[in-house]
Length: 251
Ligand code: 13P
Image 1 (cartoon, rainbow, N blue to C red):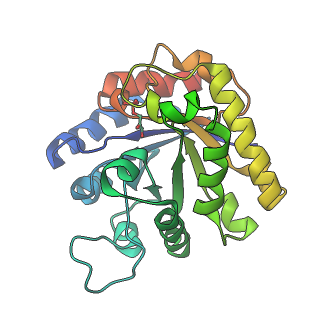
Image 2: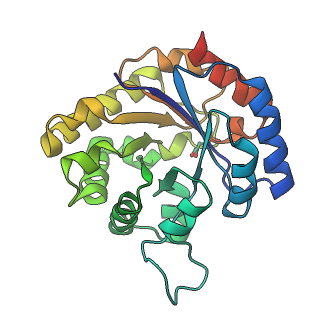
């Protein structure tokens, strides 16, 4: 059985004190989270303080990016071991904003994924087509290419530790969520690609949907059997709406 996962990507938002007070409130607002894993991706600068705040709670944290090197002359970069040292268990890799604004390629995503797994952290690898890709009927071709290139060289066991986040670029921050059918169709396709690459891993991996998820639309989306949770941007910044999203899984 795959356990549901709800993750919040804060992107470039919240100071350290804002991040800590969010966790303080969230800890108190969520009671039983046995049926869902709760995860937040704060900014690098808030990770250490946030980790102190969530100790003993059911909240997990992850970093929004990573560099694949172990240490050395890479000004501005952060290694997997440094991320682990702050108490993170996950790393978000290849978000479309990183691909779009910072030139991140699937080859880089692959290097980061391998380095993160080697450090004992869990990678959450983002994939997704642009509006133009969808208009051109190349959604599946793009998804297949992103998966092949991002995961090349992983063993089946390593591939099972990856969480895939399907985030159609046209749905991110636009209020235009993919329909439950559109999302389900891509999730089934991802499992098919996985089964070609890794056989049994396809039933084990968790595939999240991301893009304009909010407390009003989560129920329709989560009615699909191949959607194992959500990666939330805007609606994860507010404790009330994030707690409502978590509550969906506990009902
Ligand atoms: P929104 O939920 O704001 O559309 O962002 C989605 C996202 O990019 C999460 O990684």
